[in-house]
Image (cartoon, rainbow, N blue to C red; front, side, top):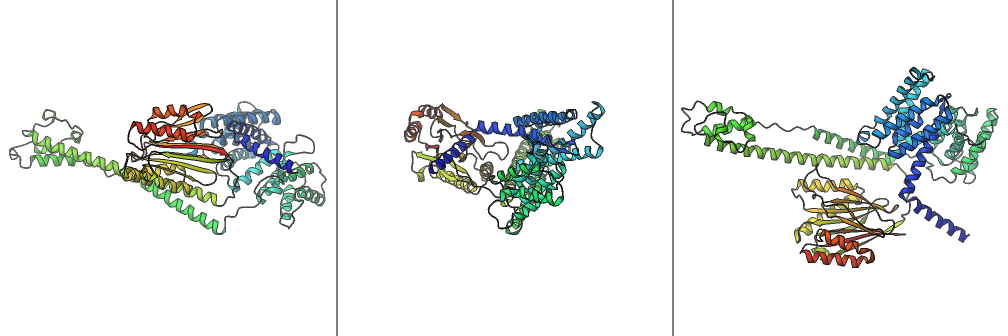
Length: 637
């Protein structure tokens, strides 16, 4: 038994590593999308096809949308014969919409776009099928139901993919059972019964009830399946620990005898589904939103609403217009005041009414003035003074816009963070052990208290781990203070679960508001210990290098530092993988880029201390700046 357990444990670890491969995950995703489209195309109500597969295609994008469309195309062709030609039009139109809008910014900003397109596709193709292609369509009530289901199921599948809310999951299970009820690969084994039995044993009560309702709507058995599944779920509340996987079959036999209908077709599927449900890691309890958790969620959502309203009010604020005519008139008044020609001058009023466009000409000469002035030098001097005032006013307005943009950005970040925190309060998350352990090495040419390069490693929430290098510009106490202040702020934000993009842009806003552009540069590595992949964020930092068995790859490029603008310049982002023993080498700007790349090219045969020693010696030869090397690796647990 011990030998068998060791084999099973080793096989589980191998399977987890295999599933962590990106290509394997991508292939499984394509296969799942194709099977989902195929199965959903079998859904039927009153003998008519339903556009559930269209909804699946619309919520996907790229290759997954193509795979789902191909699966639905095959399913509609096999299950629906002549009427399937109309359904094939649904799939092709949905695929074109998914490729055009799926995963775009427009689709994220307008959540109802894809559901509206789904309803439009079903409505328009149904009309064209009857009017042009002469394909007999369903009655008007069923036609309207198809249009509504196309949009509604797109909303449900979108919520399942983005947020996995419990209500959306239950509805999706009901839709899946309704579709699987029409698929029976062998006699006496309907996939809809298998799914319903599994939900009765391992799912939540609403999911089981909706599964029974789906089987009743599919009209696959005269026995009321809603009563079977709900009654079986009630029995689960009894203090019975063993034999629950037999409950679906037993309850069906009991209800069948009480109902007076003899139909043994559902029995094998329900029994098999109960056995499978015994081993499925599904949620078995209804998440409650009442009590303290519900109160906290309501409070957080109220705060989110206030922050969103405040951001909207700030975005609607308008700048006070600049009175350029008054600046020209003031320049004319100052020039004419005390002018020896003032009493006999007849052009003083015309000078005061000169167009404001003169303020945009700093090199204006007396010959270019539209009015002849005997003392034009006095007026030009005052006009240049007004031009300087206009530039100061415009610069002040621009600075105010930067400040307002920074405040709006922080409100938006806080709103998104608190909303995500509110959504996760009521969820149950399964904690999975990490497959990798981070190994971080820091090396510098100066002690930590004298080095302006602030380095930290710390865990985030769930399976994330962070490595941070903040390079304070220059040397001495000022650089040390800048690097330490920026690094400690980022560490607190990231440790609390603040998204990395929000944390970096919050630091950028702080540097803009305090008028300290380019005070620091940032290297931030976000590692996922379950997959071995990571994300490297750079803002103003020099390139980094991934050293592995296949050679050296430069990651990132030098960009402007943070603190220059709130909206125009953002951090760069690069995806890296350290699953196969690669090393990610971060260096500060005290080490020249060419020397760093040459050392890393020879780093495959060097240990981390030897590689760091060579890099730091190159930095000391180039100048007195702070030089720091951080080497990030992952080891299998």
